[in-house]
Image 1 (tube, rainbow, N blue to C red):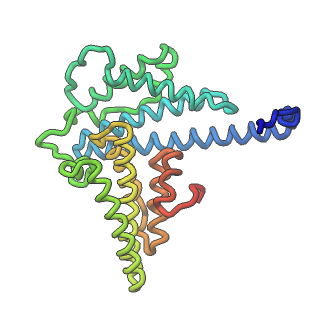
Image 2 (cartoon, one colour):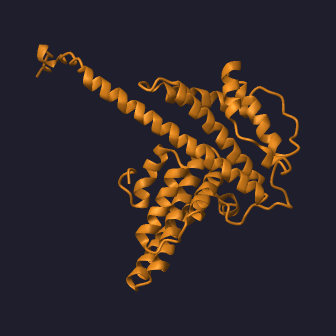
Image 3 (tube, helix red, strand yellow):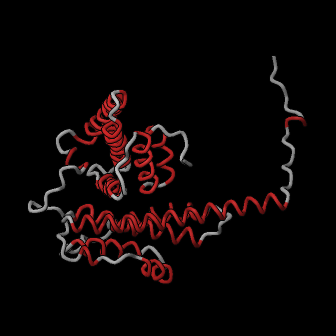
Length: 296
């Protein structure tokens, strides 16, 4: 039996020419999406700048430097989004290309070992110098104008030492004996157990206690994801995870009131996740936090 031969009916018809109104609507939607992306990035720049200052005040140079660098990377992302045409995906493509170049530059690829930093500020300054070297002079000047102030890092040691132990709740500290994989498993267990306890408390009529327990359970689930994400990009020291956890904890601590029911507790964690993480990661976390979509 021979295979059928494709005839004229198998050839796709030419695509219909879009109506001018439909084209205009798509352009408007793209422009609105780009504006929302820029606004979201602006908010995250402010958030991680505050996390850096808080960590510096708590004498934690590891998170203070990491959060400061996060604001720098987000600043580059923001500028690229602003400069790319709203009707194209050029901003995302350019950012990926620039991120690769910046990563190689900051890692010091093919360069001599830099001079030892005297304080935490010099760590970020050295990284900025390499990052700006990726761009031409005019682009580097535009980025440099927007970079946040580093005075809060000026007298902070460049790294955590014996006199500055890592905070006990840091993910890196919690993984010191069991490793990242063990910590991920422990956090999943904590999240699962926390939800069961919250359900039992709620059934017994203890609404506030149930809300607190559910909040802790969802935070443990988010922490597990943050560790997974760090490991996926080779960050076994969990610096990225701890910086982003710092943002999450800061946002939750700013809540005006403690949640009085489970729904409010989960909504609070969800709002903090959306404010601290990129939209693509929020989408991946949604089902793990009992969400089916990110719009709510």
